[in-house]
Image (cartoon, rainbow, N blue to C red; front, side, top):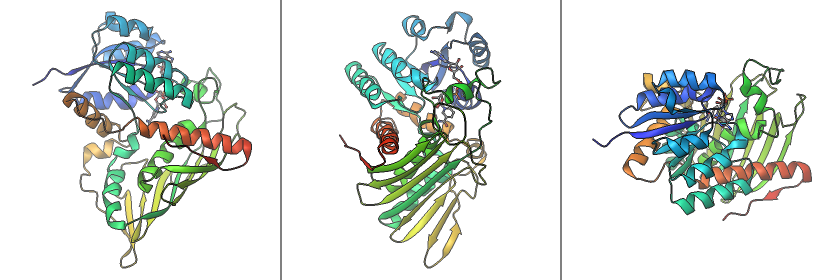
Length: 351
Ligand SMILES: NC(=O)c1ccc[n+]([C@@H]2O[C@H](COP(=O)([O-])OP(=O)(O)OC[C@H]3O[C@@H](n4cnc5c(N)ncnc54)[C@H](O)[C@@H]3O)[C@@H](O)[C@H]2O)c1
């Protein structure tokens, strides 16, 4: 068997400790965490102990890790404003890159990323994890039988705590509420609803009308995002996201097509995540073919996402999320912000 991919982690915070770690533990034949970088020593120590990474391979400065550690790939899971710089540095160091979403905070940064990745010929991908949970995977296979899609909705609502201060016990709240760190509801939370409904429409967005605003909290980023998108195939989708709405069902997507409709709870992994409507049968729950205990625990789809991505990396095959997807997602987000300030629909110019 080939040697496992030697992985360096840039950022060892909440998502790594609680979610990515489960994937790395499940994939020990394919991937081995060999080096870490984080500016917070406690996080280095915690993740270092989780994966038996020796202290000499734990770095406060990720650039030193890139220079000195023996690694084949990195994952990047830091506040959004660092992604572009860290991906470019990793590409220049010649390692494969798996970045948490979003790709970057602006399309200008995203262009720099693509240029660096291209220049250095390194594999690069972004985590679009909710496409990989059991309900979404089954929904994608159902779509073929339903014919052309014409209308979709996607909702991801929740209630954040009212305290976003830097000394909050969960530091992730503070940077998410900061414009300088690339935070905000649309780019952090609605990000997932945008790629999920686009995947179900199977057609890129051409025009975006939106209101991305700060209605509830005293922060310098948006806490609510409402989008109306027109797709290349003529279909229409809406995306609703909020940090200030107590949701009864945190996240769901619907797609309505020629021969029927689908409704999927894309943010959870539960046996009844997917329903289908046809005129003959009405709404029916669909059995999820691969639903088992592993799937059940993988509510965010990360384990499945990393499994497919590291297997593809090991085989030298194309990675399951092509960079065109996160680039398009960011273009939609930029257009939605512009639509808000200009109070008009914005055209997305596809490359
Ligand atoms: N795909 C998903 O479902 C999902 C869910 C949660 C978070 N995320 C993404 O993961 C990333 C991290 O989010 P989080 O919730 O873990 O945040 P977090 O604040 O818990 O963790 C961020 C970590 O990055 C470290 N860090 C900050 N600046 C750094 C730097 N310059 N160099 C190295 N390390 C640095 C922090 O010390 C911290 O340990 C974000 O991009 C976020 O959008 C994705």
